[in-house]
Length: 345
Ligand SMILES: NC(=O)c1ccc[n+]([C@@H]2O[C@H](COP(=O)([O-])OP(=O)(O)OC[C@H]3O[C@@H](n4cnc5c(N)ncnc54)[C@H](OP(=O)(O)O)[C@@H]3O)[C@@H](O)[C@H]2O)c1
Image 1 (tube, protein in one colour):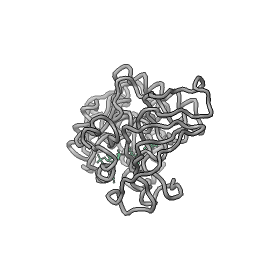
Image 2 (image 1 turned 90 degrees about the vertical axis):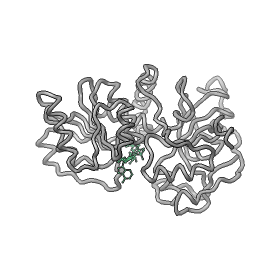
Image 3 (image 1 turned 45 degrees about the vertical axis):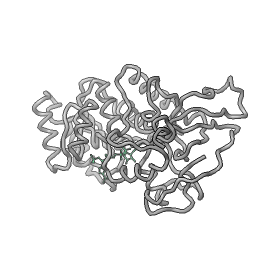
Image 4 (image 1 turned 60 degrees about the vertical axis):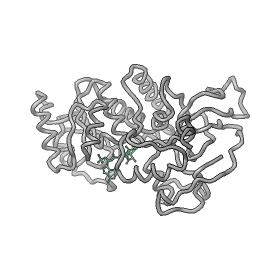
């Protein structure tokens, strides 16, 4: 098979090369999957440089998220006891997605929603449950809430906008460029704010003052923060607000003056989605049921970046470079072997 194999750490994505490596043989406990599309993540860029918290022993194949078809079943189980059969369309996450094939255990796979492309499904496994788990299970979003979503055109941000809207909330979306704010609106945001303007908390406050009454006039009920902006966000929250700590895309970990948390009677809540599979498996099922219900109701759609297309594994370096350059929106997905990719190779 072809794959982006890392035999030594590289300076950046443009140093990555596609090589021929042996196709994995069917395994006792894992499915063999033919990958059609691979989702990119910022941590892939860190991993190829040796800077990520999870570094497998060299050599290893890059990439984590994928969508494709089942090519072979786990050999040690009776097919009747398995969830998938050969040819089923699945998406999931495991090390080695920048390849034409990968081995993955059943718990890391989910069925591609009916009518979805591999391209859209390849970006679903991390972003959607992070946003659903955060907004629904941790912050208890409900009809009538006002939700401030930071970096709303990013991968988790666009999922958060859709989920908050589907639950009946009003969404204020922040983003750093006009194109990204336009995308946030396309995915349902009611208001967009340029957070490169230092006065953005005042703008959010003004929107709430002009459009809400009672306690809500003071600010939003929920802040969804994948950037590291809890401290300034405390300036524009309502009584009893919940602030979700999702990530630190801006690169530094914030320190927050806790007197503000007391004075405004608010909660700062963390979410570490990857750990739910270890500590709260029941919630994993509930979250995915919630997401698939929204998909079936037409309230949640794929967020694959469409301004530029990436075909074939050879385009992984360019896709990662674009992601790292903060030029993209939604999920940057590489079409590894789908029909469009084949016609272009
Ligand atoms: N807690 C969890 O379980 C969990 C799960 C998934 C992801 N995360 C974290 O959530 C964060 C966002 O993930 P994502 O997949 O949405 O990433 P993404 O698609 O790359 O989006 C990140 C967004 O952050 C904004 N940003 C602000 N400052 C930035 C900077 N210095 N460099 C790059 N981007 C910057 C950018 O929007 P603008 O250009 O509009 O500013 C960008 O669109 C990451 O830190 C990730 O690790 C956490």
